[in-house]
Length: 156
Image (cartoon, rainbow, N blue to C red; front, top):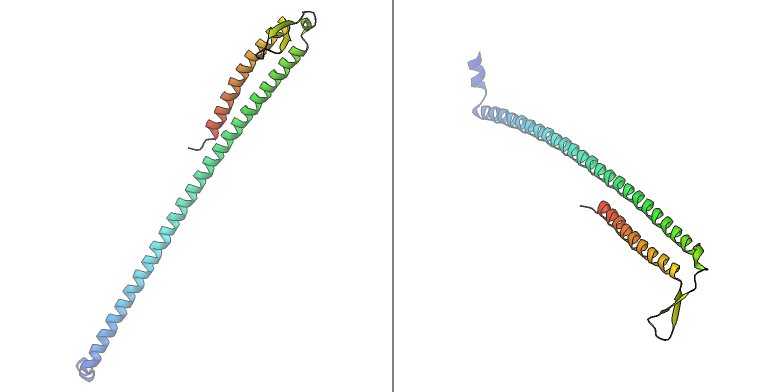
């Protein structure tokens, strides 16, 4: 019976049947490859998204650290500025409230300009020298504070 069936199908029919089977096998193979590529692409995309998420979280953490460091530096700077301002105000008050100021007669001092003279009492001169010294100390503290703020807020 099979032999009869084999004789009834012409040669070109067999060729078409073999070609169709091969085409179907090749199409199935291509379908499997496309599925594998799509799955690989999806896995790569998932890995990429995870890496992007992790990098974003790390960048946010670094930014938050910088902002907190900058806030601390700003707080230190403001506290130092308040201290310097209070020192200045105390020095001005001390100069104004100098009790011996009115009791000591002024001493004439030659000025840089030969045509005029300025008068400063000896106690006021001492107070002014102390204030100048304190001003130098405060200026150095202020510069150190500014340097600290700049070093903390400086981006690497």
